[in-house]
Image (cartoon, rainbow, N blue to C red; front, side, top):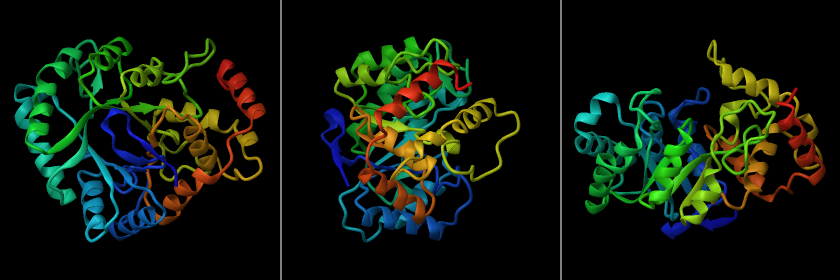
Length: 322
């Protein structure tokens, strides 16, 4: 396993991390016993960074992780989140405190290492599902998160950066108030790192990775496997009318050329691609069983994608994979 320091937090994390969506049964079915075994296998292989959220199976991910870590001596780093609903904005401090207390109870911990804001950030509150504004995030939300730090409920605080309003996200990063950021980055969308190609039909994530790096933030790669599109087969029926998944599956079907040499599956290619970005301190694909934990950890030892394949990938970007 390779390890890195999570920005200015100083936390030592495995570069191959463990996303809790899998054990929360977001990405296909699993059982609690299998979820616990997958965490144990990840620990055996040197994975030490675990990213969960209350919304992953309505607490199932946090509960399984909490049970799995009982009796284990590994030095782990655990991150969870709070998602604020519209009604919560009348009492942000109370909502954050209640969510954190529930998470700590399920995780069987007195403190988490990182607490992320699990909302979209838009110009106007409610403009997107569960979206809040920059003023919210730098006002009552920040105050509530600081209270959690002062109460020793979390060591550091961070932001989830997915489907955000780019100027608002830039404002939040430039504030210097938050320590980490969850950045959407994968084979099909690299706009968190580089400018959006002129011909690409993708959401523009506004090059937040280099911006966060200048602020010394810890950078965590999310959606490395595009919610399952970048795997040999989707592990659940796609939601009807999910235009993003339909587009991602269409694009992923064009990537067979990446299966070359030691890289044998599309999921391996997806993980290797994310690991090649050294600005990302840890990548956290959703893991739900031992086999996925093993593949995630093993990707650290695979060679990088060859330059000629990266050039072909860039050409596909420019053509919107058509």
